[in-house]
Image (cartoon, rainbow, N blue to C red; front, side):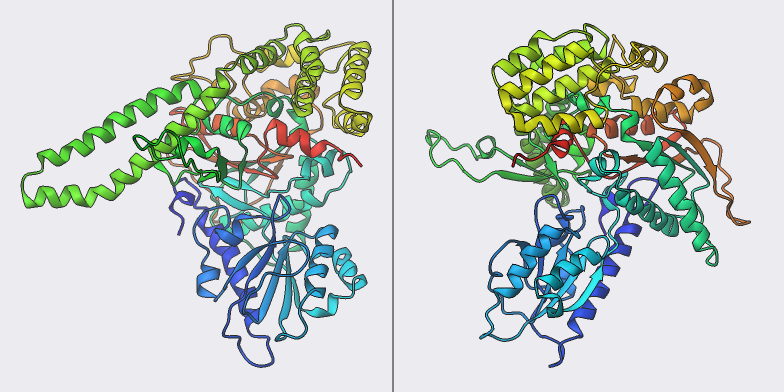
Length: 612
């Protein structure tokens, strides 16, 4: 069991075990098929890397970092990333392809199968689509002449992957683009299926709230799915009190701003992929005297980041400016603990010290790692360019000079700074001004195309279609109304001991989280006017519970709300929701689900068209 998945009010190990069971059953089915009897050698899983499939599965278990029992218990010999040309050598009978249903991956699989050495022993192929089987993909395999090579073609319903005790993600990278640019509801269907799975395991959610067009569609799909399964009454006592479905386009601002929490900055600068981060190795090299910096490691340092690590759980959601003091205090505590060995006189005291040693050494290693990460981040955050960029962002978010061409953005374009950085800033200005004046927008577009190339005209079109970069219509800027009514900008922010969610951006309170906070108390009726300004409908649905399953809340017991971000969520927003969960008088604990964990750069990149 993964301890960090069960620390909260909702034990996500239940979901984890359910999806592992399904995978084991498929492996058993494959192992039973060879006509010569059960293969004694193992079943390697060949899986696509990159963003297309849930990568934690092959080398680590689903988002938890533990070695996967299917590998150990079901004789899985080797696991490979799916690549073109020939399969890696392995003395096995069965080969399973574990893939997202994407046509380009079928071409790679066909290449693998066709390049098999027919002179060697025959091997059996199987394919497992995640999360749904695709007729289009099977037709492509048929056209390529390899469909008949697969003994089993099945699907693995891995809709929601548990990343932490309060965090689930579909890891569907294209979800926002599919929903808002292509009008493709596939990811919304998978979200609804994932929510139905959660309800089967954790009980019917009595109340559903939502804001946005996609939220409305997901709620409708859930209601329809429930109606189709009316014969089977859910007898599980409900764990969740509310479900809040939020469209990403209700709050386009939060992902564009630079996150200023510890975890948010790690993601901004280095990118967290499936709970792992790759860091420059120099800071992690053991310091030896007289080395003179020779033989420094060249391979990136790969670290897992989740709440299983005590220190990371403590600092991940803090504003970066508050992390240094925590690390300093922790260093003193660990140092004092090691000094205790001098006071151990009796055999019992020595034995007790020795029993604590592994935990102390792990704590010291963790402290060393996070001190090195903090130093790497500080090198960036103390740079002049980071300060200038942050100043411009905060001016936009506080409503200063949003309606004219910004000189810093002009300089960035002139110096050919990374295009994603420029687009992010221009989009932020556009969102904070409810669109740009036509002449300002045309100027930015012209400068970007002349500097970075005319092939990016498609990207600019995508950003406009998504509502991120658009001309101001009607001449009225609604952002000041939103900012004042929802208190989106706070001038006095206590970064060390925060009293408001605005600490995650050092001034800006994420609109999405403010909506969740106001829904909890005093309710959305108090902000009806603001909700009408934001895109899409807002709604409430009630799901009746069978007799005997109605929840009677004990005095002082918090409600549990599942908040689902359709289109992605940032680590800063997650930190803000955790802050609300920990408030003594908050009244609500949050579990977060999303289509994808994103930051501003990865989000903009997902909307960019690749040059031909």
